[in-house]
Amino acid sequence: MVYARTILTDLSPASEARFSTCLFSSLRQRFESQMIAMRNKALASAEEDLLIGLTFHNVPASLVAEFIEKIVRPYYKGNLNVAFQDLIHKALLEQDFVLSHITHVRNVVEA
View 1 (cartoon, rainbow, N blue to C red):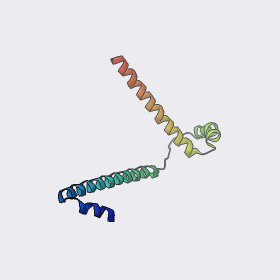
View 2 (tube, rainbow, N blue to C red):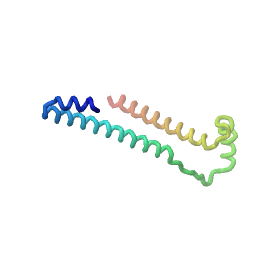
View 3 (cartoon, rainbow, N blue to C red):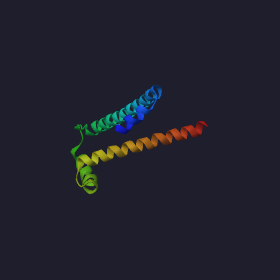
View 4 (cartoon, rainbow, N blue to C red):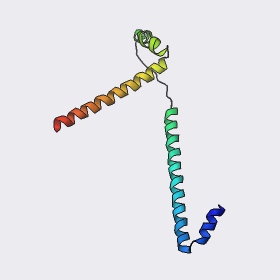
């Protein structure tokens, strides 16, 4: 800090004002970018932390039992919660792929 003061005392008043303005602007931009990053991180963690409970109605017990026996036990070590989450993620990825393929085909046909 002493070094910065020494430099500033050697500058003309106009140069010192320009330097101070540039320094303030740089510090403000850095602070704002850090605040934006912190806000985005907080929003992302809040979204990740938002857990909901699901209740299924009128699902046959035999269907659930078969799903657990054929899918959950062998592939998810019996963890039904992880199985549902994984299947939801896979369904969303598949939907994104289908929509992108349809859009691509539609653009090729129109061209």
